[in-house]
Length: 290
Image (cartoon, rainbow, N blue to C red; front, top):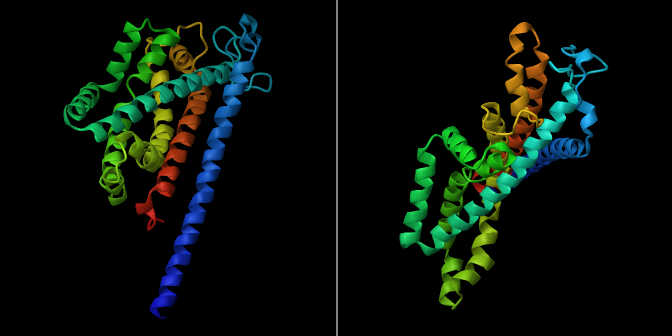
């Protein structure tokens, strides 16, 4: 086989890998978006009567009338789990949006300005990452008054450091490119260069970071609610449901923990898989991966 034929075969194989990966990424991303959208919409428009108290049906095992069974107050676990997961998704969306914007601003500013500002932002990142994440979440949620507001503030203010580092590293790499240096020599300001060249090139890394940030936000919301520093007991939330199930799981009421936990795990795994596939698809260095 000649060198030319070998190069064509290599290009054809690389194209097949790319399109296979693209289809897989689109499938996983579509499944994640569909699952989250349906859950969020169902919880948003759900009537509280669907998971109302009914002591005559308490501790009912899973059956056609109650797919996920009922809890110690006779509330339908299916509707309550859907409502709880929709609350977690809502918090995750808002918190991820706030954290990602903070990370984009701080990472870009640190890379472009440098000097004292860069050292100060890196110091803030090291400070936040030096404290155990769960403890920091609990402290901020407690100071913010707990409840939905406390959870949202805590999750939003603790998930920006890692994404800030990623954005900063990407912007530093782009800033050293020749076409960016040529733009500076042609008289363009830092703002113009950032708007026209740096931010568009850093967007793929930023979007991947946002997608991977989302499942962490959902999990941490459920974790601090489970520990009693998040949503109150009267609000349907996955953390509340799992916390309540601990009092009854040893008596054989397994469905109170299994089904809500599986719904949460499905959402987290779908989002994580979507983020990983996006990273492989958009990363030019992953072309040789299977």
